[in-house]
Length: 243
Image (cartoon, rainbow, N blue to C red; front, side, top):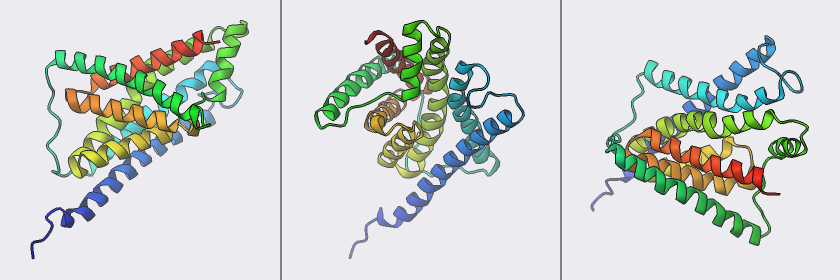
C-alpha cells in the first residue's frame, strides 16, 4: 500500500508552527516587559500621567521590540525554518510598486465589503473607544495635538513595526517551515488578535492576508509596509471626515 508522503511531515509542520508562534509571543512579551520597566522607572507615562499622545506610541514600541527579540531568538539559537518552500526572492522594484497599488485597493475595498456584510448580520465593525474619544476631542477643539500623534502612530509607526514582526518574520518563517496555507492563516489570525478589537477581528484577518500576499508576490517587505500605510491612512482620514 502506498503511503502518503505528506502525512509524515505533519507533526514536524505543527511543531514548526508552534515554535514560531511561541517565539512571536515571547517577543511581544519582551516588548511589554520593556514598556513596563520604562513606566516603573518613570520614563514612560502610565494611565493618566504624562502627555496623552505618548501612550499611543506604546503599541508600535512593543511590537517593534517584539520583532527585534524574535529575530534575536532565532539567530542566537540558530533556529532556521524548514524547507517546505524556498525563501522569498526579491522581485523587480516596479513590480513591488504595482503590487502595493493592488494591495491598497484590495485592503480598502475588502474592508468596506466586510464591514457592510457584518453590519447586515448585526455585528458592525467598530473603532476602539479610546480612538473615538481622541477624534471627538479633536473635533470639539479640546485637544488638537493628540490626533496628530495618533495619525503618525497609525500611518507610520504601526505599519513599520507590525509588518516587520508579522510578515517579515512570522509569515516568512511559517511559509518556509509549514507551507503557504499555515503561513497565511496563522500570521493573519495572530495579527488580528494583537489588535484587541473583537468587533474588527474579521477585517484585521483580511488585512493580514492582503499584507502577506503583497510580501509574497513582491518578495519584498516594503510593499507590504506601503499597503499597510495606505490602508491606515485611508481609515484615519475616513475617521476624521466622517461625522
